[in-house]
Amino acid sequence: MNYASYVAADGSHTWGIVSEGTAYDLGPSGLNLAPSLGAAVERGIFGTVGEEFRNAPARPEAEIEFLPSITHPGKIICIGVNYRSHQKETGKAEHQKEQKAPTIFTRFADSQMGHLQPAQMPASTNEFDYEGEMALVIGKEGFHVAEADAFDHVAGYAAYNDFSARDWQLAATQWTPGKNFPGTGGFGPYLVPAADLGDVNELTLETRVNGDVRQKASVADLYFTIPQLISYVTGFTRLSPGDVIVTGTPGGVGRFMVPSGLLSAGDVVEVEITGLGTLRNTVELVD
Figure 1 (cartoon, one colour):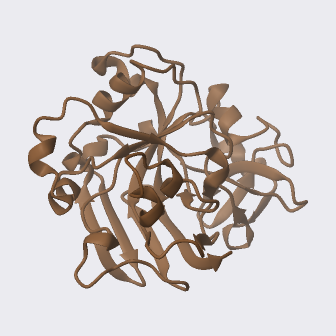
Figure 2: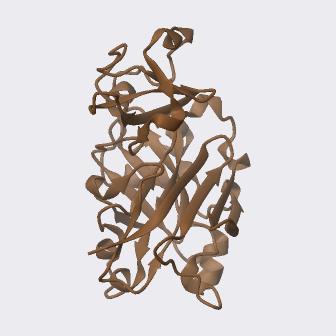
């Protein structure tokens, strides 16, 4: 089942199920099962809605304005250089063999945007890049979670695009500035319950720029696996329902292409993941 956050007909924020081209409103402007998709995750409603959703107020999917799948997560934990193919292109593959912990940075909730919303390239960067990724959303509170129990804490998965201002990211050893400009964290279009997907290692991630395939990898190519990530992250911080972990990007980012594959205004970037739909954002230059 595809769940989404979007703008209701009256302009308020809502959420619901998108099925066969129709969005069914389960939020405050509809069946009012929970005030937001994040709240639905917290209350255990997410992934449990049956066919009664068809009784909700409905609109064509083509008419809705998507919001980030989880609009106000308490934490967004991002993992850097976590696909073997990306390690290779960055020249860090040998270093990674000795790495005992994942590289972690954070993204602010207000830097996110939804499917079909513009990716806002700031005028202050000359190196705007894409990073197609898979995000997971935490379904229940966890601290010091064992790897064996990690998947029990995952509510669902979604596509993510960690658009990056590389010059800001690499100006110092900490990446936070280059990862937090407004309108640079694409998230969606759908959040899909983990139970609907089976083995996530069998999923394929593909990123396209103007229709050209730039990234393509199996989730099985992750260096630190999802259980390892959850166990490590909960070793230093408590995760709550609705928190997000963005698991890393494969090789093929624009910065390492020859000639450069960095983005320009008007470029259309798509991240497609098996079973999760296609996240699409068009680059827009902003002051």
